[in-house]
Image 1: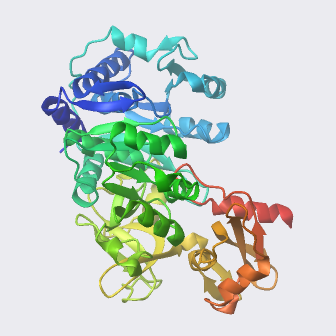
Image 2 (image 1 turned 180 degrees about the horizontal axis):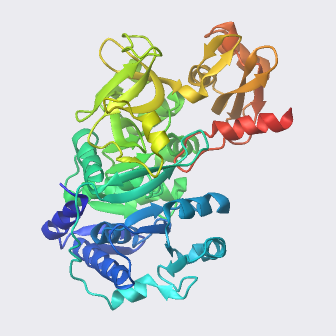
Image 3 (image 1 turned 180 degrees about the vertical axis):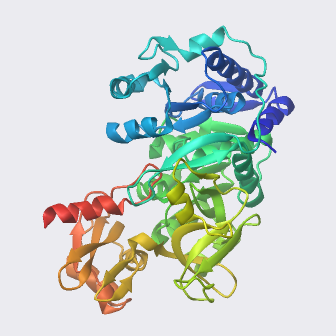
Length: 507
């Protein structure tokens, strides 16, 4: 199955049903599909051809789904850009992918213009208003044909080049194809959700990343995608009642904001049937408060941009056993998962090993990075995730940390997450992140960055004692630094590199 065939099947079967809702406007499946065809034909008429890279600098909006589907149908390779990145990073993405076309939202015309000055030959096309080069794709589409472009496509044709920095700060470009992206859709339907025609998923996180992968699964079932421009706790909760939302997908930071604001306690979420979360570890206090407020309707996934969306799943029934809340779940039905020890052998039960995965939804490759591909793919075809985990006797996995985040102090290994879990047991701690700081004696020392709950107070010594009561002495933070916020990526992952850079500037 190709991704383009999934788009066509949903459009044919559910033409009159509501597909997308944005603000007060709704689009049927036919509306979305016709717009996708018009966008695709307008782009092809400009001279773009199958295999060309097209950069997208757009946020969540009414035409987000149609624009993505247009690229799928035309055989164009989407290169989504995150406006929160620096101009240097965005320029690098455009140059590395050879993207000559930039479709941008009117609100981001300033960024687009700046990129046009940096990247010779870049053509900026607006979406809903004239772009930096004077053209508006939405206006062009009004005069374009609504017929299917019928570009000849194969399973290994690239569909998406998505940059990921993980937590290291090094940009990497992941390639997904017509075949691997279709496998992502099957993975989601097989392991995470089973939408009905009355289902509505609310999207407030960027559709560029994990949130957007849920669009096609809902499209194939005749369900509705409700889109918000951005995440704001009050607006998000109001939208659940307004649209009759049945499922939501959140990163832990978003859920922490919802339950921490107190708004979630009294919100009307009677339509809500499932809350899906992933992308980073969920603080146990947040999960406890959320389950108390909304009930046992939570599902966790663990995956990577290289292997979205679910390598493992902790489903709703698993959440009934609070002993499993520290687990990232059981391997998905369509994934082979193994833990590999430092010496290359399979890690025994209870021992730490690197998670490696082999599945249809694994990326095709890193973009133009042969050395990285060789490093991250084993000779027998397994993807190395660089994530470290233990497996219990039932087969559930427990993330320990990323290999690159491990702290070595005095010859002992310290995994930041175990220290963070200890710190989070103190009621005054809202968020925390632990990194290693260079030390002339110990090589590295443990440093904790802590965000406190509103109006809460606690001393550095008290937090150090909390860790000392639970972990070995060498794991106790050498320093605890109180900060207003923890830097995170667009998908809510802690940017440990940014924290380490702060320490470096203080030395």
